Image (cartoon, rainbow, N blue to C red; front, side, top):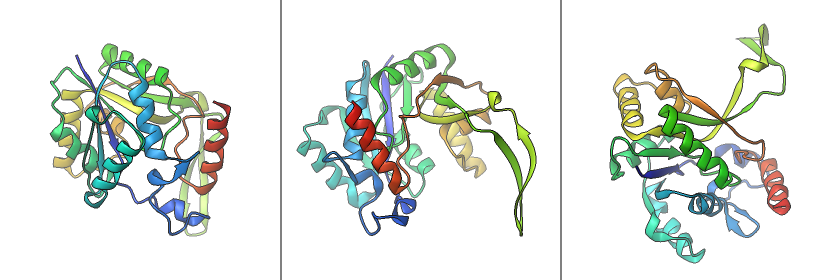
Length: 237
């Protein structure tokens, strides 16, 4: 059984442009402590035990750029393939899946390119949970009170309070047996269904997805202020 990783990194990062980084590169190419966020993410997976190969899905015109960054930062290019992604995360994952030399019972992890603070131990725990349950994601419990709302012309109106002990905030990596993820992705494409993550595609097949305890440090860099927080966490390391 081999473990493959897909890093969808074809996003434009439009929300990052609301702050001081306006006009700069997509967020996966912004730097933290002198290294591109994508490079830091890849390093975490290269450090984890048992990772066979990583596929990074980027826009066609960025393939050479990423390959140059891999060489510049001396990453193990023999274990990293840079492939063309799609207009959406789901399309990028689907494109990469088609190129994966993976067997049905191999494991595929999908991870956000802009979660560079994932630690190897959490990656390894996710792999172990997939071996047991076929599907698992990293998640953290909700600490705030969760309100369900109805959107109106005048704003949001609360309709109910959801017990937070029933809520998990999904992170990545999200891992699956390869045959299961392929079936979920292709079924979604056939049905015209767009999910917010890979787990949502698997859930609609009626498959249980396990949760691996994550960490607030495994943040997704989305807004300019997230860069400062990520810098702080990196400094603590």
